[in-house]
Length: 382
Ligand SMILES: Cc1cc2nc3c(=O)[nH]c(=O)nc-3n(C[C@H](O)[C@H](O)[C@H](O)COP(=O)(O)OP(=O)(O)OC[C@H]3O[C@@H](n4cnc5c(N)ncnc54)[C@H](O)[C@@H]3O)c2cc1C
Image (tube, rainbow, N blue to C red; front, top):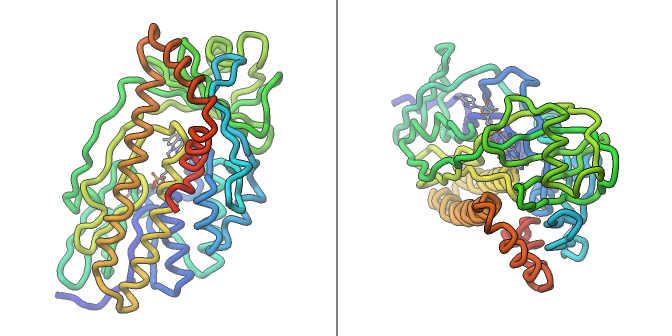
């Protein structure tokens, strides 16, 4: 079998997980190749929250500082029913350099990660689509749609929900998809809306998230029975009127970007199969309730970089099993919590007022609010 390598680590996918992994590996001097099926600049806004734990793990890559410069600090997070706050969460007293949710569009996070990768001498080969993988005792042979072949010691699937690496590795992806679809809109608003707080409105009519983004933009996310392909201003206005602070409080003045999506809740059976490893959405997907998805991927990536760099430097191969064993329970726990949140958000209408009474009782218990702050900030996974 061929034992010469084109690269030590082939990273498939240049989303936030793949870019973080590649940046971290290159910063340690590991020969790394990154490929992505998309042409440059084809990414969209999507994840809007970078949490405290992600900023902590990105410090070592000199990316946290750059993100903070471009984002908005939101030290507060609340669950509300109309004008009434049910659960107030304050990140301000958390023991971290970053006592807030950093609000920044995913496209900016990816741009800053890519800038850092390039600064360190790395790059992304694109568009390049992985089609098949063969692994043997010494390495992995990856074949691409252009007929090209790359031989690597290890391949990481950071290739998202429909991961080719996961499929080629034969790793199961247990779970399912929710019935409801979600609308997502980046809008401009006028009226009574804070620029330093993420608000989840749990109205009887349904859930709505209102979250600030840089540039006086707000991200609106809401589960709906049948989402339009692109939500209009009138559609978003109706959601805010019926589910938000109430009619007349907030006016949608412009829809900048909108989309719809369906949500899966799945976790890979293992994050490792021999020389193939998984990180990010390739390994776990769940509801965006709580803004954890991208954050988990960023944190996987740094943990996997630690393990791969150590193994390539002669450390025991079991470090890669430990990566899977450590990260998979975290993913399972996030999937199960966000699954419960999503089910609570989509309870039959008649039960929603009762749910909100329960929330308001929980909201008066400081220890419960603190526990939520630790979880949402990711610090609980330190
Ligand atoms: C509409 C929407 C809203 C969301 N909102 C939030 C949010 O508010 N908060 C949050 O935390 N998360 C959110 N998410 C989830 C978040 O976007 C993902 O968790 C995050 O993008 C995962 O990053 P990743 O790098 O693991 O995968 P991805 O971002 O999916 O990147 C995978 C990359 O792999 C490439 N690729 C795929 N297959 C191949 C192949 N065969 N060959 C080469 N390249 C390939 C793709 O082109 C892509 O660039 C949202 C997702 C969606 C769709």
